[in-house]
Image 1 (cartoon, one colour):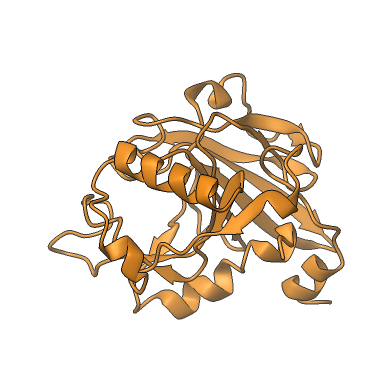
Image 2: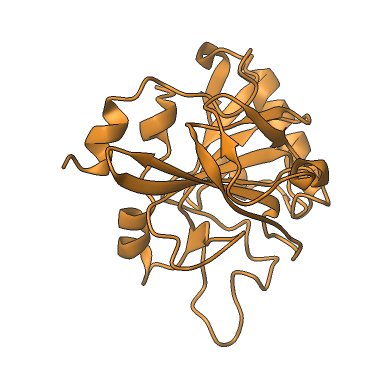
Length: 225
């Protein structure tokens, strides 16, 4: 059997947000600890991040900013979800973020079924979240859609079939979306480890090797560049 990377290579590029926006209107965004420009900004609130993202989009004549896979970030330090006295700090992002300052439609990446969904309400968490289960060539895996609107969870039922390109929800706004500037957290997960409605989207350096294996680069599906 092919591995998951080979399977994704054979799939045509998919879009999970605002299908009418062409990839030529996307711009890569660096939110890592090595971004000196970011270090000079006082980004402690969702509003501050919205302003930063909007200025970045306008300055680059772009409509969506993307990036963040395997990126070490400081923006999680405000939340105890990612660091407390009993755990290692989690600050390495293992999904791909799509930033757009509006409530955009969100679409299923592939045919599948609803695995689980819930509102992860802690500050800095996903907020409303939907996880889909897929199977290609007997290979099962999942896609996670985080930071959605509350209405996105209405009328959802575990096990319901979803078609590739079907709208499954809308992007959420702060504070409902975990209190972030509006963006979709899109993540591929092979083994859900018996979790439902939630799965880590940020890990520590100690667990990074596992999560890179279990959560391949989402751009293998999106093929933005």
